[in-house]
Length: 240
Image (cartoon, rainbow, N blue to C red; front, side, top):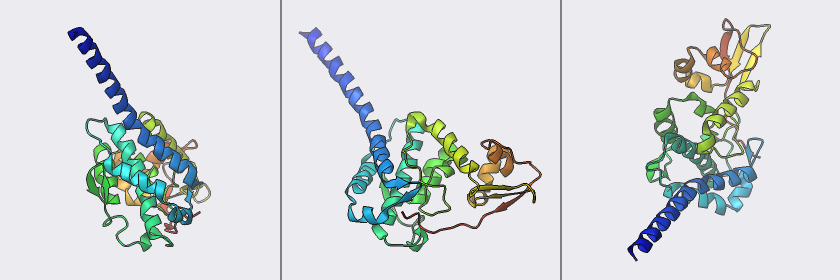
């Protein structure tokens, strides 16, 4: 009898472990399904979401209840990137119609959300949960802040087991686009998105200079003697 009980215990333990692993991945599938449906070329139909917020609200609930304990850093990073992007959409939807995320008071620094049991602002997610632990500037290309000059919102979720590949892909896609990195050979200048100015120390700390960082991901390299300048930032809402 004791052998049967032991075998049953082992089976139940294995089943519980499988369920726990399934639970840690299901939320990313839910994120992915939502983004595939709602994001088109980086734009969101906030008017439609305002009228039908049920799925978005359910994702926000899952974000609040998610358990990150004892999970590896890539899992946490993927979760916080997805959570940030969904909470940007949530905050805009709740306040819609607006012309810009900057029209919402305290959008980045004051408004708080329950994120895996912690009460966090968007800035806290970005700097204490993402950049702080990883020191990885690629994360700036993964976050959609709701404005047209932000790196455009990805229509797929970030997954823990694909995170490094996805971050490289995002960096390559953003840096190859002339509206984020524009090279003028005649004037010998390179005009960069304003995020390269705001977070310059992170990019230069990683690669030595802004041009060297860009060249890590750019197919046609920018000559290092080119003058660096920055684009004006368009805070217009990424509304579809």
